[in-house]
Amino acid sequence: MSKQRKIILTITVFYTILILYFLFIAFGRSDAAERASSYTFIFLPENFLKLPSISDLLPPTLMDLVAFGNTLAFIPFGILVPLLYRITFVRFITLFFLAILLMETIQALSFLGSFDINDALQNTVGAAIGFGAYKLGARSKNGWPKVITTAISCLVLFVGVWGLGGLADKALTKEEGPFVAIKELIDSSGNASAGNQTTEMVISNQNVKPRYNMYDAEGKKLETFTFKTRDELIFSLNYGFPEQTGYSGRIRLSVDGREILNSSGEEQRSDPELFPAKFEMPVEAGRELKITIEGDEKMWDVGFRKMQYFWN
Image 1 (tube, one colour):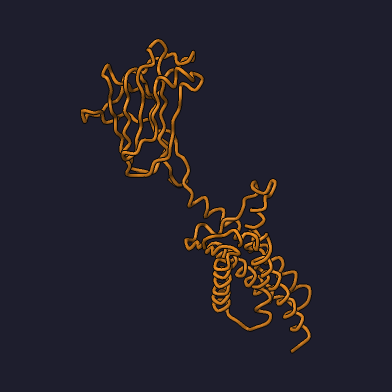
Image 2 (spheres, rainbow, N blue to C red; image 1 turned 120 degrees about the vertical axis):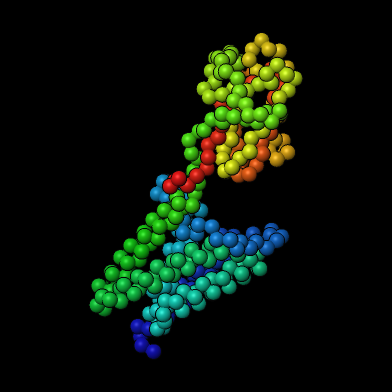
């Protein structure tokens, strides 16, 4: 064995020991193992390419550093292993991924951590960056040019993965769209109701002027309105009792029969500073919302913001 190969092998062994230390000993893992009572296995990949953004790093938290470490710490393996053995990328990355899965499994079974497929994939991405940098560096002459080319390639590939992860996160994350007022709710008679004419009200000494719609019991003891969602959305409404109405009544809202909101006039009488009140909640597609209004309760500006991808 050549002297250079012995040095590389020694570096690889010591670096592997260092990584194993962080995987099984560091961060108080032994103390956590004593408190653990169940195994933790996470098999579903979830945007494993995403790394903290620049804004997240001002200032960086421990979790930010861990997120970077899951990728950066494994880049050297992609350089050291092919320096020691002739190996193709497919074989290297397959064996490396299987080895990481084994380490993750040992972590979980020994209560020294959890099995997290996202960590395994981030580790493997780091090794892939190192292997790519090694291949690019191998095209240069031996000596410092080769070292410098490999180092620059590592930086460029890592920044590329960082940017790709950010784009993937943006592409896979739904954002709130513009507010859409609901023009028709189905009332208790099964008819579509556009609500009453919006008029200015005084609620808790505040002048309130609905912008889009307004619904109430329309002289009845109570009225029920339903709305079925077609998309994932943020549903919202405003409610309260106009002054000099006696605060008699309430508003109830349920989703598929499960009550989410129940507010009465007595609450407004005892805590007037909380009114006019605004209620909003995320609702999945295919749900039925049922809103019951009793007495003098009013609700207005009923609508939603659709959750959508940026290209929508």
